[in-house]
Length: 133
Image 1 (cartoon, rainbow, N blue to C red):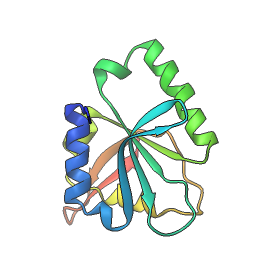
Image 2 (cartoon, rainbow, N blue to C red):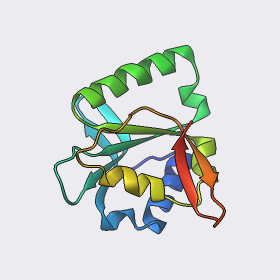
Image 3 (cartoon, one colour):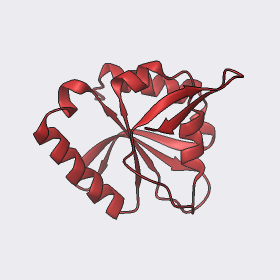
């Protein structure tokens, strides 16, 4: 049985509405080694291990112990070749587009900075982008 937080539900809705499933297989609450990730997006083409999206709610991800655990966990996942995108609840609820997530999924061979927190930017035409903070 899938148990999801409100921000995970919002992310699932955004991924579905943004048609991310056209370019990637989406797995929620996916187990990798000793850990369970919120979302794993596996590109339908290419050799990339995939993009992990972690939905970091303030309640469970703000203490010193939680930050240390998340750091260890993220290093383990990155060492296996996964890319990790961490988004706070505030960032997730303010998203109106998943274009940056789609672009991150499509990065198959280029270096990608992992573990960055992203903020939403709106350009003059009204398009919404996530950019590293």
